[in-house]
Length: 390
Image (tube, rainbow, N blue to C red; front, side):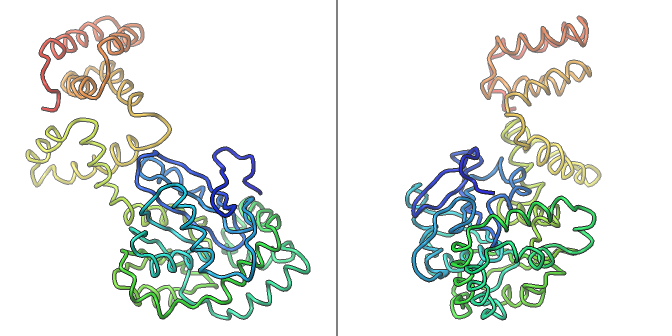
């Protein structure tokens, strides 16, 4: 389960392997996983995050190909390792989302280097893990026997029984992931958990924080997640039903909704920004100004579904989606919407030659009459030569 050789895997400061996704110019989100998992633990979040944020999935020492760190493990050392990577990448400020051990590191970063942390997400974590002495004992055991003997117990904490029965491939994959972790790196991280006590530091954290708990998490109970949220200045608590310790894997939909709302805004808010970008702010503002009590909920729906979900998906670039929309509007004989999308497309860089090719293609599959009407609309828009943001 090493990330060495995998697409996007890079070695950064301190031998930390990381994987970067999303637009290079977008705000940065650091993703830190749990003890015994690799960067793959965030796979279920990437599609939602990719259009909006530049994610850096950073591996812990001995996890996913990352080099070990010398000495006894500490959360401070793990946090400084992340800072070193951000410095190397010239990232002055980033949001941080941490799962379990990753959440401890996120807390340390926000408490000790507040100028580097924008927003914070703390999933299935706490400022001081209960029974911390057992982690020191686990470090000794792992150094003697490796991580494979830990697999059955870990899987029982990571996933509920019902989820494991319904999705047997998931615990199998995570069991193999844990068994492949370097024992010394795992032991180092155990020592970090065992020695961590940030209860005296969290009250000073300024970063807006989302605390996520699993309703059936045996490691960090909902009560402990609630206590953490209560100890922070600006925090919201979200407890996911039917989730054990890897809540982001077991309850992906609920987790992603909360994550995106905290980091980027609600689906309708995200959709509003995409809609403005595609059609022009003036057009969108005009649509909202015309909305009545009857149609206001429909405008909200438009923001959530076509613009916040479909237009924001990373599988197709914006230009391709624009051209598909134009072609389909020709085929469906929607002249008003077609004119609107042609205007917006020309404003955003679609050339007249490309538009011509799309309309010629529609003549084959949608028929000459539909294409003829579309060419008339396009001719009028091009000849007007006006700002398409109307």
